[in-house]
Length: 361
Ligand code: G3I
Image 1 (tube, rainbow, N blue to C red):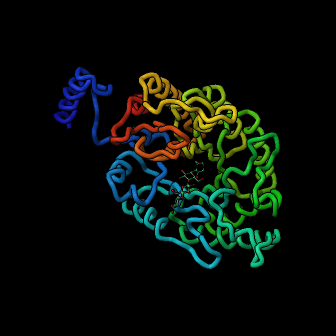
Image 2: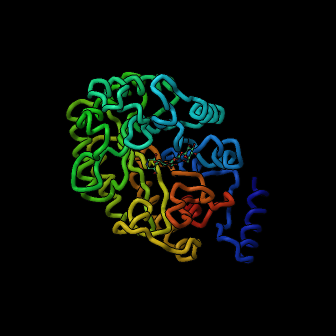
Image 3: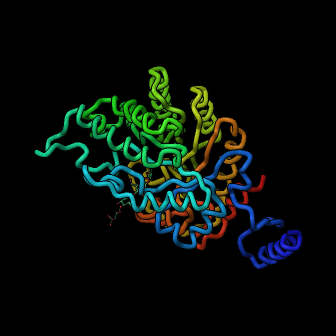
């Protein structure tokens, strides 16, 4: 071990002198993010079945001790027709996790996006009644949560039900047909199917004061009504200029005050400014060059350094931090006329400077 460390010290110095990305003098090549944070909280990542079979799979096993299916466990991918489930992708992710002793977060049991169209329609193509829709939701959640009972330690039960505009509830087929009832019912169905799973409400822009207040109000109402909810997922699709340390600490303090676990469930830090990954500023797409500039890298590592300082400070309230996608090789933030670089590993699956800021404490 000592010899390996010495070799790496020399290598690190050589790399620095050669102008290759900065690395600390001492590198323990056996350690990954999960090891640095083993006394704090699990470090997870969103994955696809393809990645698990490729070189990303090796990186995932080394660096992470929790995984989330990026898409495979959502309603439409799992349940494309009322009488047909498609389990292959979800099962392959579960098998990978079990082989490698990795925890699994389920994502998600009820969402306005990637919900199958049949869920809301009767045979004549009309909207179903509230009773029929809740029955279908119950069947879906019961089937899925029962299949993975005891294997999925936490579920994002309801995803993104709060509106981004000045209204309260997001307008969706769920809210249009059931009002707000689908939310409490989803948690009740999930708890009945797997009483030991930790049940989360998951949303984004949770550091934005107006939206944070609405989410807080929703969660307090659910808790006051005795709905079985254990935690709140703060997605953490952030950017180089948000959130501020103050906004982040306020969110952790507010949601912790409800007695809920906090997990950061979809962490990435876009190199473009603005909320939700910097995709749209005042409704306009940012048309910027797609290179990862030194300025972007510096801003990004400072933001990663800050948020992990705050995560460590509130370790008693945080039960998980999950990155959304493995590396800059693929991120959901690509497209929209530009490439993004929001993660700790570059497209060659090598740790970026921000990685060393995150583990160097
Ligand atoms: O699987 C189909 C494929 O058969 C088809 O050929 C292809 C082209 O149409 O689409 C494929 O489905 C895509 C799917 O990702 C799998 O790649 C969907 O079109 C595409 O919309 C979907 O995007 C996902 C998005 O959620 C859906 O809204 C992203 O990968 C995923 O990263 C993103 O994740 C969400 C979280 O679940 C919730 N929080 C926000 C986060 C980012 O939007």
